[in-house]
Image (cartoon, rainbow, N blue to C red; front, side, top):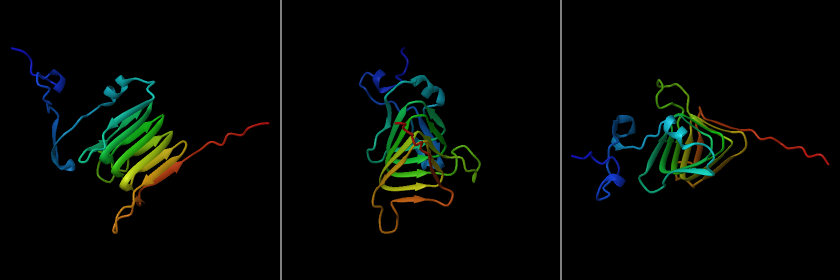
Length: 175
């Protein structure tokens, strides 16, 4: 008797195998997830031009916890939430219909502010609405392209605990 297929690639008919069902009231009950640990991400290695993670199709939700990457990375989802410390030594792009950078860490005590995105340069592409309650920090620039919002919601808002911080180095040229 053979082993049960672990992935769609291993199933004779290519049927997806949903082995990552998680129940968590914080995320609306039962859902399926792809979880990549820092160990998994470290195995990806260094030297990629850009890592592309996710897809922006309707209904796709992404929650980012603690992670560190050494390459440029572009995250894409319909609804994206940052609930941890995202550190990238390269460029970071967050592309979503709605984006929330929470001030509370996914695994911290309520009220503990420990969540945000840090990178060389940050680019936010948000079709509808972005709310920053944590931090966005860049050694270079922070570029934000936000949609129009709606009559009762602004397209981009920095909450009372939110922080935007960008540093840039001016290169002096000698003639």
